[in-house]
Image (tube, rainbow, N blue to C red; front, side, top):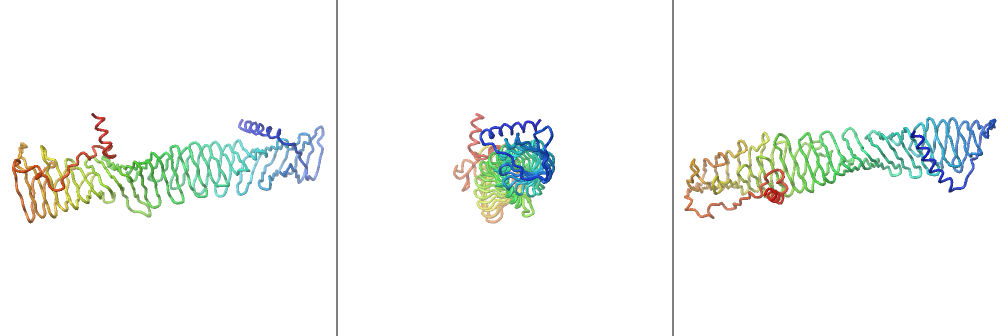
Length: 510
């Protein structure tokens, strides 16, 4: 059925051409024997047959020539040479000179430059420069094979069109698709329909795109997906350079690393497989989902370093306007690095961290994570801890450097080094206020329970005064540099996208 449809299509096109051009006759250039066929207008040609029609030459072992119909049938070792550039071979062939149309049967082979096509049945329309096969064909060019059930070749454009279960097989990759166009002049393939490109290291899937064969460069759009052994990259469109191990993705991007439990999202991303580096930007955020409590990070640009032969580090980096959320801690800064090897979060440039009811600031903040929760905290340079009192006021700790230990996500004790200062609200068990304590010393060790100061140990240059609430002015209840910034704190994972999202959420809730 497919063969019949293909012939009808070619016939319709050829009839239009035949009506427009002048009829030219077939010429017998050579044959060893000429035999008139009885009761027929056919002439049998035998031995070294050479037939010419215009500039096209035909060769075979034998043929039946029909002068009135301006056609012939060729048998055994059939060979056509078209314009000194294309050669076609088969066991048998039927040629119509008026339509300039040929049909090839059995062991069909076409050669054009370094391209070879093999099939069992093929037609060739000289006017359209179009070779077609309706059932199954294998095209070989260089180190790759292209296989399909239906195919066309325009020899003037040097372009193939393959349809239905198309496969491209090469030592570097394999491609599977529904429709493929291949221009051998510029070495470019276009594909449509569900397409898979795979090799030993990775796999790409998409429904539309192109492949530059000499550069090993693929472009996909319409829901492309890129996979390697541990990563998955999804986007609206994607470009992959196999030689450099480089992938670029655009719009609605998600990269998942199942080995290190990392997700990156944004509107633009790049992945460098060989050096173990990737980044996402434009509405970028990352998720570290190891364990039950995920860490959500948003910033202008998210970087991810993963382990390869050239890179032995795994870390997530947020740059510019960083905000993060985890159930037991939240924060913001300009630059944040999460080193997975030592489970340390490093916050730089105006960092601020919230844990439970506490707010921590400093020039530098390092957070040590153990068993998926905060274990210890290092603050350096204008280190400040503020904790809101259970009723009113704020407990405050200041020093040049602090090291804090946590228990079950709450502050357990704090070591304050150099220029230590404390303001604490002391209360009875029933909550009544004893007084406001102001103290300072060179160093301190502060013990805490339920986020309240229970004991302070002072070291050198000790100064301590307990004031009744009525005897201390409002301005004296705060250490220098005090700023309570609770309104900036991300309230949930959606809060990492900034104050505007927090305000919008509050308005919607109201």
